[in-house]
Image (cartoon, rainbow, N blue to C red; front, side, top):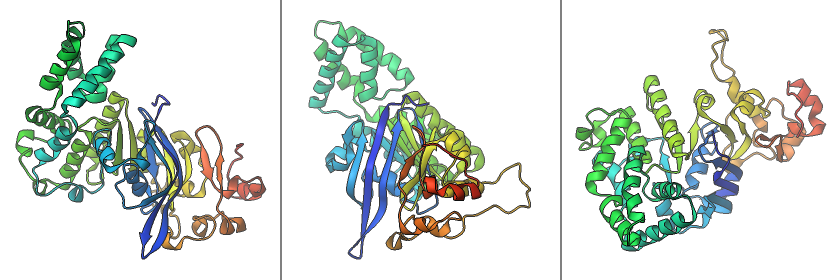
Length: 409
């Protein structure tokens, strides 16, 4: 579970796309956050804006951020330069893209694609080595030396558990030596700096971790020599290479069979827990959400219509769209001959958004106000919020008719 320390906070985000000279409001008033060590799931139908929202986090879409903030560890990504973003992408925030065939480079060997990200982010300049060293020396004077050293190694070098113990044992004597600054800078040059050999070893370890057989041979191959499921696992390996603080997993198990799907997801979640980092899980599979997510955001037509903990969404859902999604899940306790209940209609086109609530043309509970005016966000608890006119006190009779229990804001 999370530490309730926000690593990412998105405030009042609006994203527009230009089409034939017109501005289309693809993301509207998005507000959400992700805590360290937390799994935040974003669910909704295709076209609801899930991928656009999360990829805009690291500015990978052509959309224009017309309003809002994207705060990652307190720094606003929405106003960073491209050079500043390059330092964050891949290292602090990684993405597992949905379509590995288009995300991977067909002209590069798999090994080169994995080691490339390691060489980019863990080969340091002289000025960076001096900066890192000065920060460590200042930290050990004012904090617990062991804790300061571990935090420093995690921040800049991202070692695994075995490397952490080894490197800490190497650095401790240097810090108490006659010239600790020169000694630590020397350690970074010889050990902390990434080399091609260590990058290759790390790539092999990653392939082993995601259950790719004969990893030494696979590093020399191209993506056309892999099956769809293996390509998707390669995407996972690249995203996890730098042990990021935030992982955005956009349908990460799309091409995997059922037996491998759970294995890969467990591996991703385990690493997230180990690093005390966070994950945004985008998926259509509500079974996955129930098993792994701490909190859930339900998106429709470019906005969050309901957010809450996993229990709140599954057992106390208050939006008709959320309930419709839940009713479409196959259940073991229902008759196998019974048809699943689908949500009638289709999501709206962003170029022709309906007036009022975007969901009202498909909503069985729609009232006249729903057709005229968009609902405001109603806060039901510290973790639960919903955007629906059913929460208005004047809708009590409609709520009762459709079986919505009374919830006090």
